[in-house]
Image 1: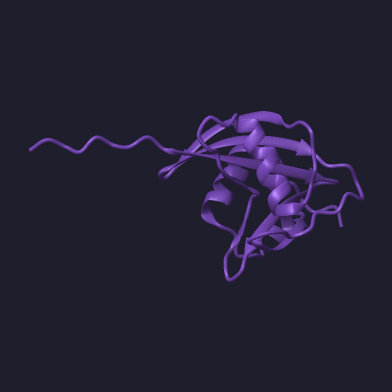
Image 2: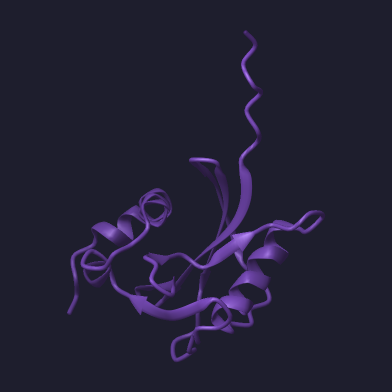
Length: 135
C-alpha cells in the first residue's frame, strides 16, 4: 500500500509586534489569544501578507517589518516577522478580531493563549518571555 503524499504546510504570515516590552495579541470571538497574522494568498509576497493581515486585524498601518524566520507547527508554516511599534500607537480590533491588546510577559502567562503562539514566542522571543517583570 502506498502512503499518501504529505501536503506541504500552509503558509501563514505571523507578526510579533513589540511596544515598550509588551507583545500584541489578538482574539476572535470565543477564541484564545493569538499573534496577528493569516494566510499568504497565492502570488502574494509573505511580507505583503503580513502587512495586510496586521492592517486588517488591528488597523496598524506599517510599511515594513523585519524577517525573523520560519517555523512549522502542525500543518502550518509560520513566516515570522517582527516590528517595534512606536509607543502610544494604538491597535484596534477589526474584522473578525473581537479584541487586541498589548501584554507583558507576566500578563501573558495568565491568559488563554494558543499553543502555536506560545511556541512562536518561545522560538523568537524566548528572552522576552523569561524576563522578570519590571513592574
